[in-house]
Length: 73
Image (cartoon, rainbow, N blue to C red; front, side, top):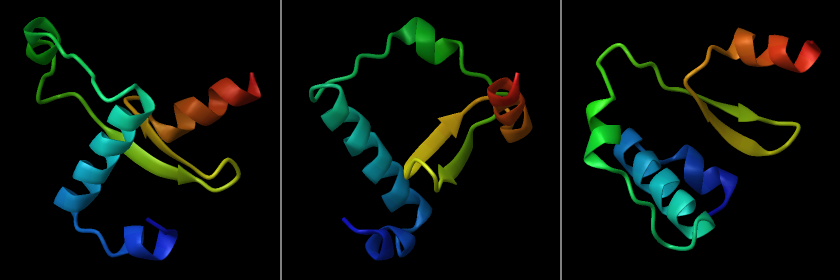
């Protein structure tokens, strides 16, 4: 899938594509325990951005500014 095709994806299609990419990267299977699922709360924040320099999609629970500050220090 190229960049142009990715830009046309709706949220559900993008989520599915990200999950498949993670599964492929990790050998086709990711196991998440019930305890790990239970630790997710409504206050958890997922951030997603595109790092153009590295050509990577970044998923983070930290704010972008926190990520950039860590790189500077």
